[in-house]
Length: 386
Image (cartoon, rainbow, N blue to C red; front, side):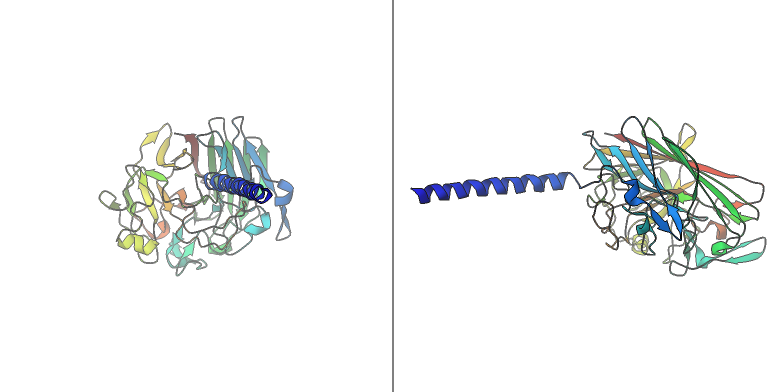
């Protein structure tokens, strides 16, 4: 009798343990591990003998945006999902020094002075040739090896809802002419809208194309593939590229191709189609030409929905294009702030911008900035739920 009771007791314990494991496994699957708030002291550090800090913007609806002066970048962005729980939708690191890494894939940073690619790292202004460092195959990407993403920006102003970073790129740094004085202002309002406003001036004729390189996963950082996210792009054309991802100069219609996002569809629906452009990019890594549908004073650029979270992100901009990158080169080189790795296609980028290689493409909108002019542009990221 005692043996029978002991056996029944052991079976009961086993069921309890298995039940707890199953419950925890379900929770782990449905609720990605996330740091709900960041520790500014743990994040802070020194890079190139300069202090790097964490800054927080917040609104009364619970949205928190974390930023740092190293690269003037977004570190994390917590927004409510359809159950009202906060999810961190931007990939980043828990410590400032983790960003000072050549393998770091531009997480959340400002890229410039020329975001995207310039063919063979060279361009001409008024008959003079400028050579930039080649850091992406045979081309220059995002301003070169250092650009502004490895710069320690200064904080010009800060309050609970806004912060302005400033940095001056010295003349001929990374090969670009002119002392280029840049400012980037992040603002968070009570409508769960994050705005990024850019401004620049130069004392010599130069080229400028600033944008933000945030990696998004609307189900939460480290929550898995983004291929089931639903995306719509307000673009009827895109700029096809050659094998080095430099635009050919043509504008091609998206209708009837894997690049047709005029109606919302899953990111992964056509990503493996037999298409030369997808082969070149190893997926989507292309500039889309916005069709200039207006909403207020903005152009509609994109709308993306997280398939698990129900979080909807609308992007509006003053720029003529948007680069869509589907995380094709993510390969678990770095560890995210919640402990997960940057696995293949677990985030996407949508970068409002002028077109790649514009300094060498006369038919593209100009990116030339002359002394006395002020370059100004802004983009907006609105978060809601369906």
